[in-house]
Every structure is written in C-alpha cells, then in structure tokens.
Amino acid sequence: MAVRTIAPDIYSVGAVDWELRLFDALIGTPQGTSYNAFLVIGQEKTALIDTVEPRFEEDLLKNLMRIGISSLDYIVINHAEQDHSGTLPLLLEMFPGATAVTNEKCKDLLVHLLQVPEHRIKTVKDGETLDLGGKTLEFMITPWVHWPETMITFEREQGVLFSCDLFGSHLATSELFVRDFTDVIGPAKRYYAEIMMPFAASVRGAMEKIADRDVRVIAPSHGPFYDDPSLIMDAYAEWSSDRVKNLVLLPYVSMHGSTRKMVSVFTDALIEGGVEVRPFDLTSSDLGEIAMTAVDAATIVIAAPTVLFGPHPAAFHAAYVLSALRPKTRYVSIIGSYGWGGKTVQNLTDTLSHIGAELIDPVYIRGYPKSEDLTALRNLADTIVKKHEGVITRP
Image 1 (cartoon, helix red, strand yellow):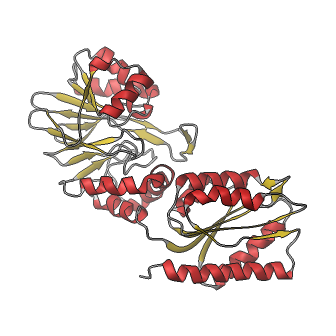
Image 2 (cartoon, rainbow, N blue to C red):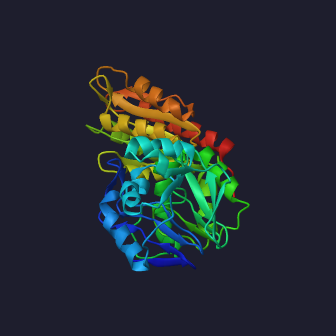
Image 3 (cartoon, rainbow, N blue to C red):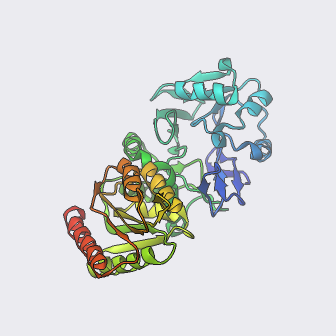
C-alpha cells in the first residue's frame, strides 16, 4: 500500500493483503484484508500507531522511508494480536530510541507473545494522553473489543480515531475512505458477526466512550476509513442492539432427503406466515454468511439428520460456532430425522443453550416425514410466527 494522507501530518503506512482467504486459519476473508498502521508526526515527537503482520514488514519499512522517517519516539500498540503487533520487535531493534506504548494488560501479552523487553514498554491508563507537540494522543481502554487488552487511540486536534479492530472490515481495496457504503457494509457486517458479536455489550460500552469525542475520521486496523463516521457507527448501533428482525436462520444438512423435505415444508410454512427465512445448505454454504444472518435473526432452527448416534458433523459445527458467536437470537429449535436412535436433539440443544435463547419444542422424526410430521412442522412454524409477534418492533 502506498503512503496516503489521512489528515495533516497523519499518514496511513500499512499494507494490503490482496490474496488472503483465511484469517488466523479460522475466518474466511473472500475479499482479502489490510493491516493498517498510522504515522502521526507532531512538532516534537513522532508516533507510529500499530504495526503490520510480519509478512508485510517490508511494506511498512518502505513507507516509513518514503516519508523520510529516520527515528521514532513512540510505537503505540492498541492490541497484542500479531497482525497489529507482530513487527514490533523488528521496529524496536531498528529504532533503538523508540518506546512501545500500551496498557498494562497488553504489555503482559507483548512480553509473553513477542518477548518484547519490559523496559522498552511504557504503560498508559484509560484517559491518559501523550503530547507529540501540536498533536495529542488520548488512550481509551476498551477491554473485550475483542481481546481483554484492547484499546483505541484518539488524535484530538484532527479528530482521528484509530479504532483498532472496532469498526473494521476484512476488505482489500485501493480506496482510502469509504465512498459508497453499499460496497463496504457486507464486509463490515461480516467482520462484526465473526469477531465483535460475542462482545456486543463491550462494543456498546466502547461506543459510549467515543460518543462525546469530536470524531471526524474513523481509521480501523482493517479495511477502509470513514470520513463520515456516522455510516459505520449507526450500523454498529443497530447490530449491537437487542433488536431482532422477523427472520429465521435455517442451517441444514440432509443425507438421504428426509431432512431436506422437512426443510422445504417448514420454509414454505414460515413464508406463508409472513416470516422471512434464510436456509443455508451446510455442505456448500459460507459460514460467514450464516454468521451475518445471525446478527439479525429472531430465531435459529438447525435441521440435521442423525449420523450414528449424534448430529451430522456439519450441523454440530454450525451449532458450536453460533453458540460461540452468541447472537441476540430469542428462540432456537431443531428439526430432522433419524433411523434407529441417538442423541442428536440433546447434543444440539446442549450446544445451543449457550446462546441463552428460549428452546421451542423440536420436531425430530423417524425416517421420511409422514403427514403427521408435516403437520407438526407447520405447527412449529405457527408457533414461531406467534413468538415473533411479541418481540419484533414494527417500523
């Protein structure tokens, strides 16, 4: 990534990873990502805010050279994860006069994960500031957004919020600022769903801290920046709220057609009842798309056959991921079929219990669905329709 100016004497000096398709060997990144790092030049001191994934250390160093940086006073680390901090050991070696700046919890992780010498780290507390000369950096500790040690940094004079992973998106782009939010809202929502959703309460707390600051630019650690902060802040306010939509998320897998038939009848019954439903075939669906749908869904129903004595592995995996993401879903249920027995319903309900949603009685049948089974599915759909009437806020 070329050096770009965010505001006077504030530069983007990070790197774009156009080819990445799996982040942390865990999260799909179909549109790549960026590792954003920032240089803030004051009248007296210079600070680098975050570093880059070590594979891109050369990009960062070249960008610093292009600006003519021969020394650094401070290297602010908002987050200890290596895509933020991984180049810190090299930078401390190359700039012996530089001091790493972070909070106490992050310092502990930097020492243990990257073996950074403790004497090279200055710790700051919530609300503490660093004067660079005409540019003031304010540090706000934001635990569990999304690690326990995360913080964000605010440059007061130009109103630039270096928001760490908050408001980010895994999106490789040549655009510095968001110009069309429709191009970014999908990756931003996916990022929220997969990374921030388990910590919605902490996200709301961080946003409350930001609310009384004069934020004019939001510069997250991944993806493009916002010179209209309301775009992403309004979206986050909705996503992290307790409001749900008249929507059923329906991940399913079928081996011999019985569960697929149940999904078809159940889907039609929900549509007839005025409920939006989004089925996802787990043998081919993108888990990120499922997570995005979970952000809004009032109900999650997992449809799966029994394999040996438990749920199909794809269904169990989906249930595990959804329980870990902890969406604001109000209701859960299970449908599917078995041949001779097993504990599919128990295993799935135990896993989904971590969401904290109300369990609606499952419809789990033996063999291919008979007329009474189809009636039970329609009754389940009717129950969901009535449940939604009590929790959906109509426009």
